[in-house]
Length: 478
Image 1: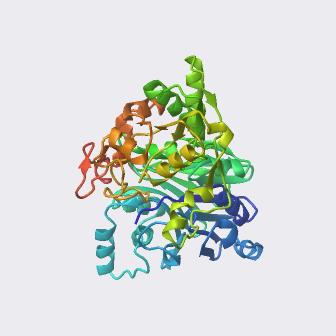
Image 2 (image 1 turned 180 degrees about the horizontal axis):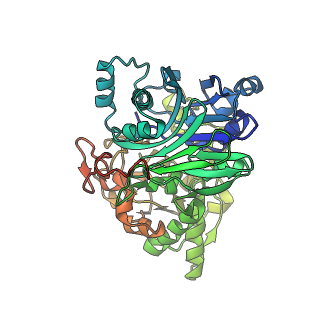
Image 3 (image 1 turned 90 degrees about the horizontal axis):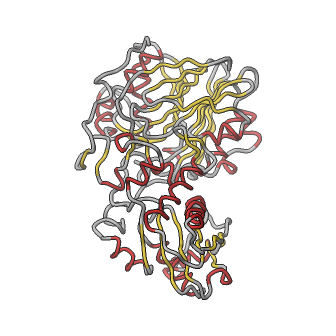
């Protein structure tokens, strides 16, 4: 089960954490719309409220007031295939001999089944098919025999795959990032405490200051009284495996991630796109909202090169059509794009158009948008994409289509362009992405665009020698 989600953890000095957690989840709503939840601890007992739905629908003022305690964690969950519904909503809570435990997870393990089978033989009962519950049970088991830091280290040594976690053990909040740092996690300071979150935009929402990213393989333990934090570098790796798609699509443009402002990364990707495959047309326009930053950089670079190209909004988005809008007939499904996007005829009629987007997955939306622009009078429509072709699925936290559904799998760029009806189509090469991110290729996860992965996944190619998490751990005493 793949989970592109958002996690947060907060420890404060003398006010309840529930409301700041609620605001943080609002800031991370783009990372998950299926479910939301908060777990707090008041020093005596754990409180939780977890339901399916958007953050604003899940919590009412009474729910917030009932979540007592100055420490807590929260989660927003993305709708994915397999294990949908309330049983997989998070944070996942469990009480056991050594206290109470809450756990929120962004990522995806690749050895969930074997771990669950092993734990089940030891008597652990599972209520969902998600990997978060497996992590919680493994950690609870280790906490029966070890102190907190060593229990986390032992648990990490058993987990293979992608994870950024916020954990609550009684009233102590922890943040953990997997040894290759595939999913983002950062640390922030508030006036009266500290926060760990998937993205810095959540810290900004609380009027806090970004301290730094949580390092790959690092455990951060927040002091329950909000006075500070302790850091333990539990595992070291020569190379990271940051998901490049976080910068391309998932993260908010106003978030700082792995040292870079996401908005500026996307503008640089747009500039690279012009340098690689720019074409002079009457107008450059983004697919809202995902293509806007790319189109801005592309148009700026075009202007610097002397191209007589206008940057304009040519598609207007209806923000009240959610991703769960249901269309009962085929005709309505085919017209779904018209409910979400409407062309501005004056911008496109009688003109040549460059349309900029972040990615093409199945190709359905691109096809419909090109048809829309032609119907609105565009003479030519050239599509430029701010990432490489997606040729393989993601196993590490993103619910992406199978190879059979991916339009770029097994097709040339020319064939894809013909299929979607574009006058021309060009993607950004992998080398341009690594340059825009100022990263070595070996420090990025590029599995969905190369078909080779930085984790050991059955039936798939690897792009490096795989080090198991337990192979060269740093000391928990460091």
